[in-house]
Length: 109
Figure 1 (cartoon, rainbow, N blue to C red):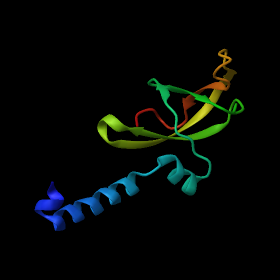
Figure 2 (tube, rainbow, N blue to C red; figure 1 turned 90 degrees about the vertical axis):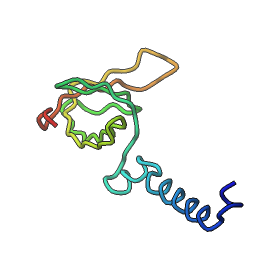
Figure 3 (tube, one colour; figure 1 turned 180 degrees about the horizontal axis):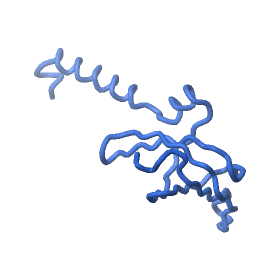
Figure 4 (cartoon, helix red, strand yellow; figure 1 turned 45 degrees about the vertical axis):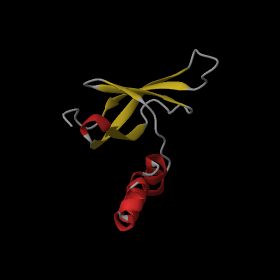
């Protein structure tokens, strides 16, 4: 409809939409390009610890940089965690490991 009424505005909005989609793009791919291997996953988080499911089992004591995208408040936070446990999944349909870690930097972030 807008393209019929005002093709110039419609064209500008289409280009703007493409730019926004490109800017948002695939977060994991952008992080991988800058920081090396990156994988998007859901996490369980508390005041002092964090847990997530992983295809690989990191060693206890490993340090992992976690980039949290807090969508509800439009904020990204980078935290460092130290792995305290990784255990194999008990679900044969979802092989992998449950990884738990404690925050290295203060959880005040």
